Image 1 (tube, rainbow, N blue to C red):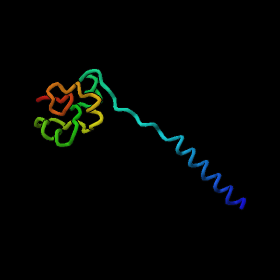
Image 2: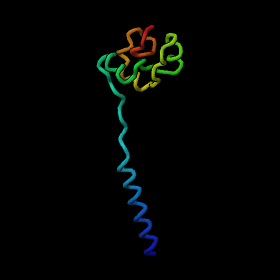
Image 3: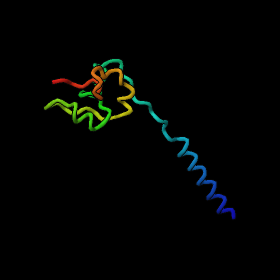
Image 4: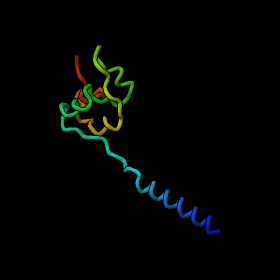
Length: 89
């Protein structure tokens, strides 16, 4: 009986450590302008794969696809095509 109690206590302690040590959800970065965004994402940020494929000019690197990052920086999408701070040809 003591062995089961000891094992149960050890398992609960490990589970508590894992749950307490889990990282919190990080909010997507908000950039002040396109120059700041281009330091991290050279071709901008698209809200979907479809948008990235259709907004991308020829011979330009595809933008990063992230709906959360796009939503946080939607104000930087001046032409409202679904890609914030895209690089034009």
